[in-house]
Length: 451
Image 1 (tube, rainbow, N blue to C red):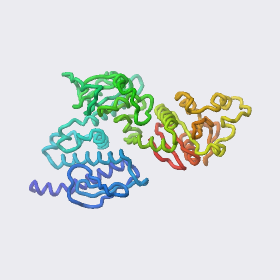
Image 2 (cartoon, one colour):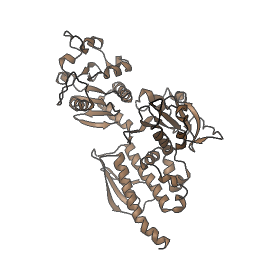
Image 3 (cartoon, helix red, strand yellow):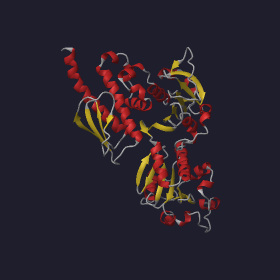
Image 4 (cartoon, one colour):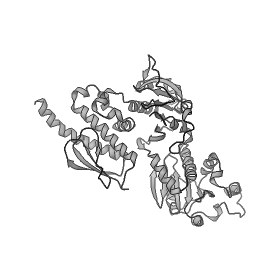
């Protein structure tokens, strides 16, 4: 069979295969959405081209086909649309490499590893996936770093999980940091490093991280707090967990990307001054934290109160401490949700050995008067914190009334906490922190988002 005939035979099969890969990628990162192939059209080179006139969902052209993507909620956020572009761009570049043997031979590593890692990389470093040639010529630093952290997650040191991290130097101007000098014997930040026993001890990811240059070489070890110091006075776009505040600040300028393997075995990726992705429970999650925080802040109606509650919830999630934070729409209905015995305003004789003996410590206090650490401490007490719209503390450690009765003497498990969150959300806005790490926002009897 002639080469041209072979190409004509293989190309339709490859197009079908890549259409399936597109569908899998979309379903992986946007579960619940529905992707439909609307048919053929003249070939569009490169990545996804959106139809600006689409009124519902997203309509786009990709690799000679018209697609339509819809979601149960009816719309997609800016970062979800950007991720869809990244998936299409990464697959289109690999497709072009696959059908052009000359370029494919230059970059066989591009077809290795998990495709989801490549999609994350295409989201973070768009330029490297603009074309087959740019993909073949560049080192995929993000995917390499992810693989290092994946392997590191399987390691322990003195019976403890290892933590690690890397800061990928960005390509945008940064007045505070000059491009790093490359030592003559610099090593690639790649999986081979994990075979060196001391690698996991030279950068713990929390205080020290590896600095990786534009070609993927580990050129320096940096103190992340020292690196982020020039940005310490800048406001972050959204609240972040206390432990990773400096990691977030480190990415505010210059297009730097910070990847961290946490002591909990989770991989976090920071960029643009926010956490963009995390790898938890065996899969990647797009955090979309700016949109989610915006929804929560709008519901609360007060920036200071929303910021304080969201920050506390993130810190509790990082500590793997379950909690329930309830802000009532109408404080006069608190009696329908909380028993009178659990209300701080109750001045009846306290029960010996019961937590209401401590009510006097927090009675008539506003949440904004409390130290964040005090808030996080009382939030860990079995039960819920209940507030009014002005941030006044109405109850803590309260067992809420909901459809699934819970024994007062038992800990509230995550199933009970979810039922309590759904019930309480009929009365106001609820943040639920699961002991496994996820943070969820409930409103009007449904889960609005999970982070």
